[in-house]
Length: 149
Image 1 (cartoon, helix red, strand yellow):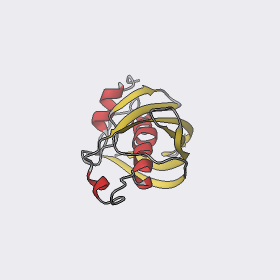
Image 2 (cartoon, one colour):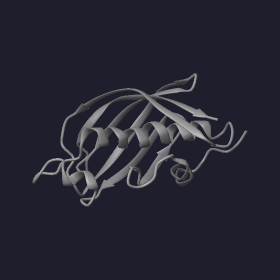
Image 3 (cartoon, one colour):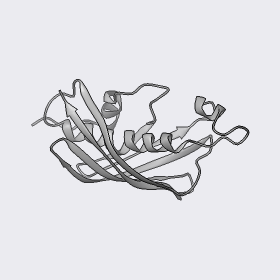
Image 4 (cartoon, one colour):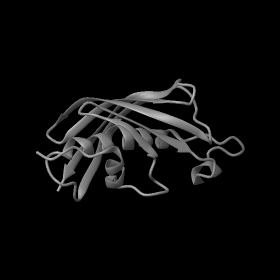
């Protein structure tokens, strides 16, 4: 049995690159949980047009951040003891997210994820995002297929 990957190794195996990488750090990984953070820097391109004179992080970007930290990173960690992570295939299958507060430029957020189930290569997680005041800004569930071919 192989040893589980360290958080920095999981980040290096994510199939994303800047400007579409929304993971700065993974602070905790286990068989059932993932935690990490991301700093939404003011110079990110989408702030230029969402919204004029009042930039706010789009909900789809918040969802993507939660998926990268709470679903994909956890999936890579769960697969890491079975074989090398190569040619990772990921497909989002469902999201149900409730948005409670806006996230503005220069906000550092924390994502907390709990595994609901992982079977037949489908991972479903309960996720939430907290702002720097530890207030929940969005929460819900995200599911996807994670294959290691």
